[in-house]
Length: 337
Image (cartoon, rainbow, N blue to C red; front, side, top):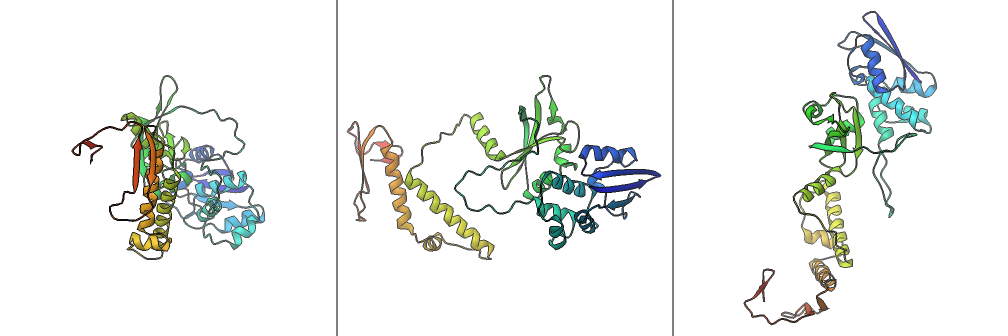
């Protein structure tokens, strides 16, 4: 436990961290500092006139206190201690002393930022895990408004949950409980990753009640499609389609890699060559995918694919269950036959 002693206008507050954020804020209010813990600088050089002292007990806590810099706040320190209280961190002292972090905020980010996941064929679910959760009963949350924000703002929101935010203050009317105790909320989502946070501020300017929502943007887009009457139908994907999608994904990954290395301009032909592929291979994948899709249709009796690249040679020959006589001027699906 790290001790924090604050003197302000003749009043003294002592808090042992970690501490519940609301309780910490109430303690500050009782000595006249009616501000967020994230506005309490951990040095006595501040605009409010308070004095502050920080005490560590064991070697790891003393090392943490030694990391405090002018930009660190009481909120940062409390978040770090909450994380350490809920998680076992091996060799914390060595991590603090030998690590690259130059502040409490950086140390917290270093500890909480997940490492790169190794390539795996197992299902990966991005969510939050609650320490010793008491219950999992979900609540109905009615989204009154969805707001996309830049990745930097979203990253701040999920790491600093007791700060005030303009998008919460400006949408107070969207967040309330109705007579049936339904939560009316706003949905804030990252315009880059698509993950989000659903919030009912309950009259506050910070996310008083909130929950992490993975794939929030996708859920929102799906809902908008359904509301417009355009429901998506998930058809089985064929093997050729899968190979085509894998090729597209590999091409995009390769371009992204070289873009990070300073390259700006690319041609699809060159990228495909790097992947031991060319336009003829792509054409073959598309042709086979079309043939595989045709074979799934109940009114198609046979599909033959020609592998010979001969001018004017049909690449796909199709026989239907019922042959109909059509004139050369008739059109089906926009194609003149």
